[in-house]
Structure formats: structure tokens, C-alpha cells
Amino acid sequence: MEHEAQTSGTVLMVRPAAFGFHAEAAASNAFARSSGGLSTATAEFDRVAERLTSAGIEVLLLPDTPDPPKPDAVFPNNWVSFHGDGTMVLYPMATAARRLERNVDGLKAVLSEAGFEISRTIDLSPHEAEGRFLEGTGSLVMDRRRRVSFASHSIRTDESVVAEFDQALGYETFVFDAHDRRGQPIYHTNVLLSFGSGFAVLCDDVVPQEQRHGLIERIEATGRSIIHVTYEQLRSFACNLIELKGPSGPVIALSSTALRSFSPAQRRALESFGDLLDADIPTIEQVGGGSVRCMIGDVHLPRR
Image (cartoon, rainbow, N blue to C red; front, side, top):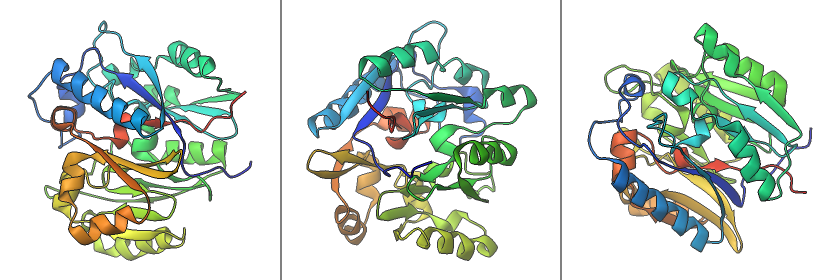
């Protein structure tokens, strides 16, 4: 299989219709808190979509439906990923409400209308029946060019499903541990690590000392410069960003909360890799427990 570009100029987003606090998901996501509601989240969503569009990023909108309620539908990156050879992967989700988000027919219609082709679908969702989960690019931080990925253990990231993903897509995944200050596994890898074409943003404070060197070595082997952030910056979603392909160069999308958390030196380092595009999404971050990267499904499919 040919290696693909790390970044995409097209993204999938799902405009929420029933956004809210999801208690079952919050059991493994220490970032989610109960406050805020749909109207604020919808306005925040529109802000992100408008900012991306104004930067020349193609935004494909998949509308959510209010019934049955899907409080986390704004985070489609967890249930689907798209790949340059025409493969679409569907993922097993840890909570029942999130499984309802897999609107495959609606998704295919949106992609087809935009001229994208799906030649193969890999459906990993049957693992749900056995209590094994892997939540898309939340669980897997991918180096698409080298076909390697990184995944931190949690209830949402099962090694046996990672192995099936690797076999199906020709990837090799480095699996490691990461815990918050209370000793709870970090719920998604993309909360502590992100990849651009030439950089990585990493919080290695949450990785056990005995695994830290090996992780950093593996990331450096991909040729990336690492921007190290603290646990406090991780809590501000500093790692939950995504590099996209703008018409005049790389665009790095992140939340205003994340951007404010960077020191001047860190910000300059990040700016050396692309134009920073931020949006203020406090309700989505505080109630949903995810940030801009989680809101974006980067589309790498071939076009007709």
C-alpha cells in the first residue's frame, strides 16, 4: 500500500443536535464535567467550522439527529477514519450512546456528494460485543507516511483491536501507558500526543518513567521535533490539535484554551510549522471533555 500524506485539506465535522454531559463516557474521561448545553455548543461548533472554511479548509458537514440523543456526536474522529487507498475504518466504541453515532449511510452520502471514493470498509465494531474498544484517531495517533501509530492503554484502547487494525492497514503501533494525577488512564492518546508533518506535541509527564525514553525515541525516529508540554497544559488540551493542508501552506487548528496555555517559546516553535488557527470552545471542552482535534475527521480518501 502506498504511503499517504500526513495532512488533509478536507475534514468531516458533525454539527451536534443533542450535545450534553454524557455520564457513562465521563466515567473514563476525567476532562468532562456537567454544565453547559446545546445552544452554546452549537455556536462553538459553527465558530470552528467557519474558521476552518475561512482558512481554505474544505469542511464536510454530517448533520446529527436529536433522536436518539447522541451527546458526544460532535466528536466523529472516534468512530471513523479515512485512508489514502480508499479505506474507511469503523471503530468499536466504549459506550452504547456513542455507537449510535455511526451514521454510515449518511456519511457515505456526504462523501460521495463531495466526490470521494470508498473502495474498502474495515468494520472493527463487532469487538464491542466482547467488551473490546478502539476509538479511532482518539486512540491512535498516526504517522500516515511511515505507517506507524502510537496508542496509550485505556478502557477505550484495547491492544487486540490495535493488532487487528495494524494487520488490516499495514501499520505498526507502539503501545504505552499514561495516567493522570489520580492514577487513572488517560482516556485517549490524542489528549497527550499529536503529530504534524514535522512536529509532535507531547506530554510525557503522564508516561511512566521506565517507558518515557522508549516513547520519545520512537517519536524522534519519525523525524519529528518534539514540543514538550506540562500536565497543566495537557489539561488545557495543548496536545489536542491537528495540522491541516491549507491552500497556501500548513494550518494548525487548536482551541483558544490550548493556544493560551503555550509559552511564548512553545508558540514560536509551533508557528514555525504552520499558521495557527484557534477557536474558543469552552463548553465543548468542559462538558464534552474533548477539543478541536476530537471534532475533526481528516479525510484522506481519493477523489473521483
